[in-house]
Image (cartoon, rainbow, N blue to C red; front, side, top):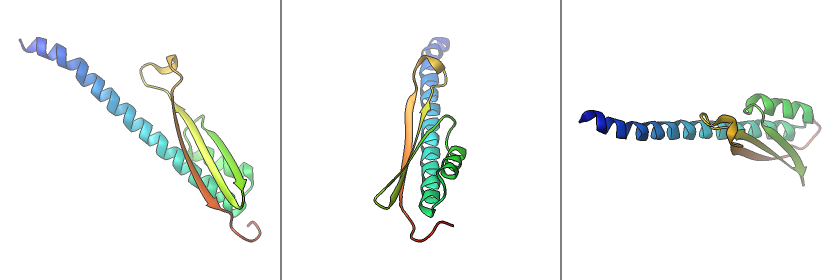
Length: 112
């Protein structure tokens, strides 16, 4: 009798555990994208070169992230986008898009 209930409940437990794992991974990647955008925006606002800004963002961002740095009307905005692939289906799906952005006003004066 117990075996039948266990056989019915076990797949549900596995699905819930997998959904929790995906949610934690997605949230972690979102935070890494936001942190990378913030680091890059602050460096760009200080007057660092684009190469330095992108290198710093790549170091903090998830692997394979796209980094976009723009300066418009005295404000630097950085957007970091990454794709999260699901653990089990892997390459069969294109993945979930995760991203973060940050804007910072350009600091006055000459660059350091």
